[in-house]
Length: 416
Image 1: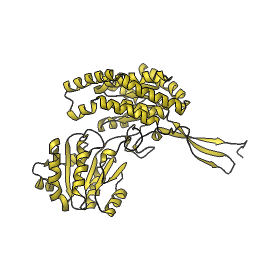
Image 2: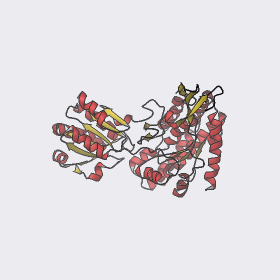
Image 3: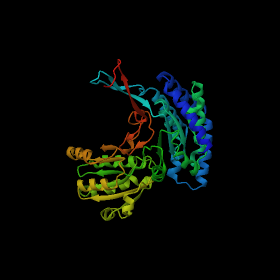
Image 4: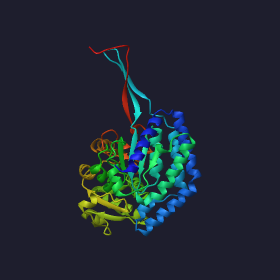
């Protein structure tokens, strides 16, 4: 076992044991201390981020990926605000969900407890360092973070600020730790750190998530691959559909809740396609369409099956005209990654059918998929968006970072 990882694991276990006993008041004070520390160290964080951006540009990173990497005063404020918001949320730890009396007279309850030590592997979004730290801390978990090399300097500066805040509130700095070496070799060992990690959560693109799923021996919560669809039904308000599509595709194309494929009912295709294409022009979105789409929009390039299966994370949109609601559902069922799916329609029955037919973590009627986010759902942030069905699904907030134990009260009972 790598000596650095073992040292971090031992320290994280000790910190988790101490954090488990902290009161809600103590944890909230720690969160507010970390909020203040982000502002205190803002200049250091922005200077470190500038180094990462310069390296990214020198290495030819794409504009959407650089956008994910970029920090500014507003984004630091967003990170800081999440600490304040999470401090105001109910603490799930210690909550007894149910208490029943058994035939033997035992009082048996389920009590929420932390997972313990959480490991998180993520890529080029430095805000994850803050979001993950806040949620893990409030839910009583120590965390070891491993970010991507593109954001290494930013992550180190953010972690230094958070640890400064932690210590000022009386907590061990090892409650939150960042692996300083982003090498793949160390990441592979991290995925097998069973002696110290209770759970591993990957946040990033398909390549990262698949690597973790294939190589980890630590229990994994799968998150994030978002091949998301928007279906414009025959009974849709086309102006609403255009507004939703522009937001869902163009506001932040590099994130997992952006739309990658547009499906349009053939009865409204001739009216809708030119309107939405015009609305997308300022964003220089590349359209990849089927034959019917290209008959209406000659500027679209031919789409392939690979395009319909791809999470572009870029200003690229696959488009398909479908003859019916049922064909739209079949397409989504074939290509969806189970993240977020949208229908735009004024038909009540079609809307309800869509809710029942589509198996995804978030299913929307007449709203942008960009709302699939822990902050928008009232969780104060998120640790990731789970696309699996075991333990947690959708944006993962405080409760999703806990388990439970049974607590049993007796009066001398023995089993016969």
